[in-house]
Image 1 (spheres, one colour):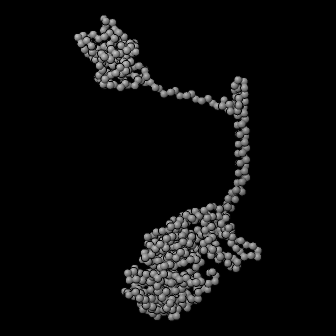
Image 2 (cartoon, rainbow, N blue to C red):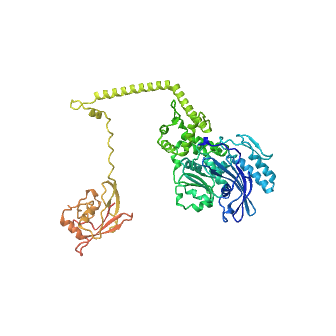
Image 3 (cartoon, rainbow, N blue to C red):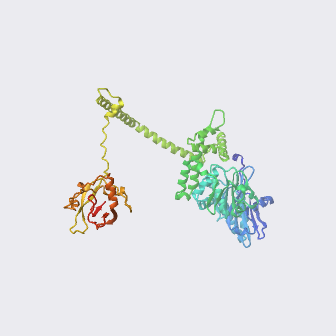
Length: 605
């Protein structure tokens, strides 16, 4: 555990300069102290200084700052702060190995030492590295001055990193959008296998360190390699959780490996995150809503806003662990997992708590808290402050609610009583009216009606049924008026008759006996006197009559004597022109006494 670690004795363990020649060989340059870096350690360090050494890849290593890290058996960390430059056909890497995560201080020292080395000012260079090595461990926020131009302030590891002072946070927020930040945060919370890849070593190490620091107060308990070199690329196929940063050229060599299934890949150059999981939706919605809202604000990239937002999110997620601490007289303080799970009321939060208690980072966090409590050390870190502020906000809201209830309780109760009294009196009055109406209801045959029959008798009568739609329309009929000249066509004079519309008959080329009866059923007439042969034309249609259609001899004679052809009037009306022909061709002017006149116009509308 962290409480058993030995504190560092020096600001840094060793400093060295390594050269990469054009043929791919290494040469160790200046080293301080002389015995601080043996050959075994140096061989390991040089591989991290040039993680992708190969003739076809060496050109991609530009001048830049980056950091690698080594983890010992006791979980103590060693940081390798590097600055790479190009000089002719060779590349040089200046490196500090230290147990302190002082990124900005060592980057600043490397810039100064690199300039002195290029100028070949070895005296000043050796003076600075010696003075820094013999420096007593400064306290947080102390000011250290190595030269007139090289002064720095010791960072406080317990404080939140600030932007733009913190180089890692600057790299992370410059290359990752809020959506990807949430995906990465969720993947680290559930301890997935995560790979960061980019073509820039500075961006890789910066994003890896920044993303890991944003899960505080949790600490990553598994494989953590901010920068992977070519000789240990097989670590990417490990089945346990890991966080690995690697150059894009190395990633291309293993991208098709089946063992990479289930790995979350963060491509920093393309600003994309590939994850086979849906971890962001597994986190409680309250925390995710807060995180999305805060990351979308424009001031998120200023000061400590970014790490503080993630710290407050952690307080929302598991800040209630305090309720599960169990204390009994004579026993040590313990953590009740079941009570912690049941403290989450919603189903989604409870399922998250069930997974959280099995994560190694959370278990280490609880063990550290219990150790501090049982040894009387106590803790007042930033996370506990966030939890207290969150609890105070909840308590304040509850206090306001309780005050509102206490002030308005009397008034609310009086209003409720008044409303209930009014409702009760209204209901009694309504029931009384219904009973009176039932008593005065009419009786059938002197017998009392049942309740349903009485209620039915009290119902208002139904409105009258609307009249049926009209099925008749005004039909225009024509009466035939005789023309002035004997051979002229008779004219038609319209007259209105309200009569149901008959369907228009179908006309055939050769009429049948039934067709003739249908055509003449509406046109009846009487037999005219011999002195007025055409007087039947002046007779109204309603007074004209035909012999009974059932007379077979008459209908047969009419069918044999006349031919019917279609024609049109001047007004465009469809008419039927009847041309009469007599069997006796020698006397065509004398039609039979019961026949239709020689020429007539019959209209059918």
